[in-house]
Amino acid sequence: MANIVLGVSSGIAAYRSVDLMRTLQRAGHDVRVVMTENATRFVGPETFAALSGHHVGIDVFGREFEPGFDHLEFARFADVMLICPASANTIAAITSGFADGLLTTSILAFDGPLVLAPAMNTKMWQHPATQANLATLKGRGVHVIPPAVGLLADGDVGPGRLPELEVIFGELERIIAADRPLQGVAVLITAGGTREPIDAVRYVGNRSSGKMAWALAEEASHRGAKVTVVAANVDLPRRPQIIYVDTPTAHEMLIACRTYHRDADIVIMAAAVADYRPSAPVDGKIEKSQSERLEIPLERTTDILSELGASRRDGQVLVGFAAEAGAEGLQRARAKRVRKGVDLIVYNDIAQAGIGFGSDENSITIIGPDDHEQAVPRASKRDCARNVLDAALAARDLRRERMGQ
Ligand code: CTP
Image (cartoon, rainbow, N blue to C red; front, top):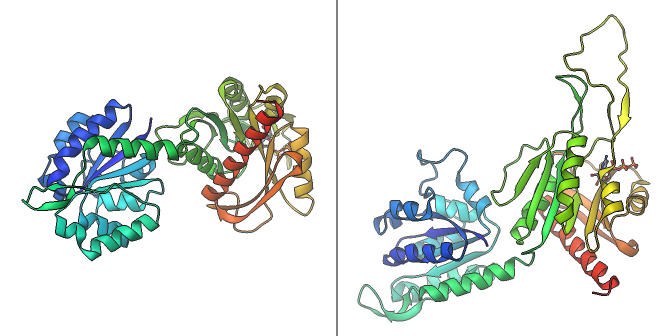
């Protein structure tokens, strides 16, 4: 089941989107509606709000917004966006990249599948400008459900009618299925950096922001996987369809991973887990003393990845991360893959400037079975995530092949 943003632009066919929304909901999809201002002249937003059970987005600066649910939230929420009806004006705005309203802004901020169901007067549909815009959009991978031929509301006969709802529904289902190859696959991802208390106010921590893990989780979720993120101190926007479990310390992360890894088909340990923690954290606050030195005894934490590697079930794929620096880093990462008993190690060289911790880009090498290595030169974390997921799926296929399945 998918999260669908139904964009309603202006045109008499807007009223048919109400039935379409009901059909999508009955099929189990979660639907949120965004309307253009002009569309509200054809159908009242209250109709969509009452039937969807959710607030309807209209205005980028709308005061009636639910807290935390802004134009980027619609883009984040959506697995797929369906614009129905798509007016000639909205098609032109999307083609030109306008962000002049909530609907166009949401579309511009969305990088998943976009489906248009145009409906308009025949002459507007046949106008070279509209046809050129649609050709451009198709070239960008936008799906267009062509209008039906028939009697239009304005008395003309020709192409421009919104097709039967079953046609739109069927086409959308086909697009969703093709875009969600990981439907039914469970993915567990750890994220962020653990903080190990020294006393009530201080901790031993690290600089991991969780962005790489977040990109992995969003990519897996967009592909239809059931994603659980075990997160250590990550302050990033959350997708409603991902389950998040907050575990500030290495020990809490260990307990959560022991619970959630059993059902996971793919486990990706992207978190920076403390290797050592203060062995006797103080309840209150440690006061300054006359001494020039303060020594804090540390003890080893459990290596979660190694534990999962030793107890994994058949067919489960394990992916670890290795943040290393220097010339021998890659060699150490290769050894780590074998030592921790995992399928893949994602190596990133933390010595490279401008990437890694806190940044939106990364540069990685994915070390796989049979010492197969794939370098992903500097790219967005989302692109890196796509490569890591593809490699994890290839490792899963290889496992199955070797198990004779
Ligand atoms: N990891 C883990 N549990 C720990 C420490 C690390 O699961 N207590 C995981 C990390 O999430 C990462 C991988 O192990 O996927 C590599 O972490 P790193 O700290 O680089 O590995 P170490 O084993 O500590 O490496 P080294 O022995 O070289 O210090």
